[in-house]
Length: 331
Image: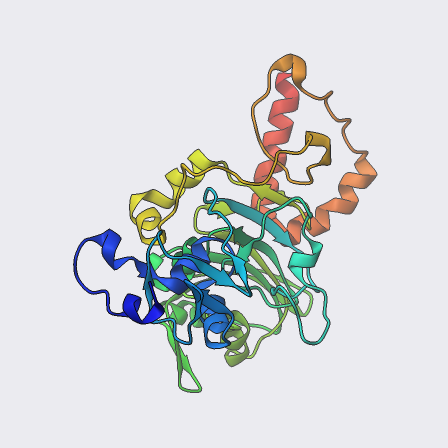
């Protein structure tokens, strides 16, 4: 079947109509839909042996698709990973300027992953990674409605009344930003700490909005994305979300829009647990558990506290310390 014949498919059953080729490439985990479209326009994609030049093409499971002469990898189960991105890494697979990237820093045992949106080079915190380009695309959309929450340190002063005005959204240099929930947490020397929550996440939105209010952002930490939290993940750590938990958090609507597949196999061979650099929170029998870790010294706890306070915020840190004291009393 030629590419020309496939473009003429209209109507009929879902199997006959098929899906857009960029969507199929993205779901195979080879690229995001946007990247897949760029592959096509660059002449890197062929369908049934014929190179195509436009992403306006539907394909079915019977069609043979190759990228750079290689067949698409077999689609595996939809997976999602939480990554604590450090500062100084670029959210891209390859950087023309040769800067370090998050994907070069990830454990080699991971499948090929795509980021859900991006974080600027000097922004740190929670970044979602997935092997499913369809899921990445859906979660990036403002229409999905997932809240992104940030902790922000900025130089300058601002009143809560001015931050409250952001609830109605704001237009800066002709660009409209949607509603923002901004709370003044505390003042620290010449800086202020804020909590920002928004559902759109336009490029450099936090910095642009606060710059408009006379503040200069000097630290930006994403602490949550939808139902997923950064919590106490160490910097640079990766944690996979269990399939059942992922399905529950996405819900039927988002899973259907993304075309998520929770029944497919995981293609990569399982490695011995000691070789896997991914934290997997799985239940184990009591006899299989590792010995309890020794509690860090008080000096080490005091050294960690300023960093934890900046990432989590003093109120949350106080709540966690209260829970720790309560647990120690019960032992």
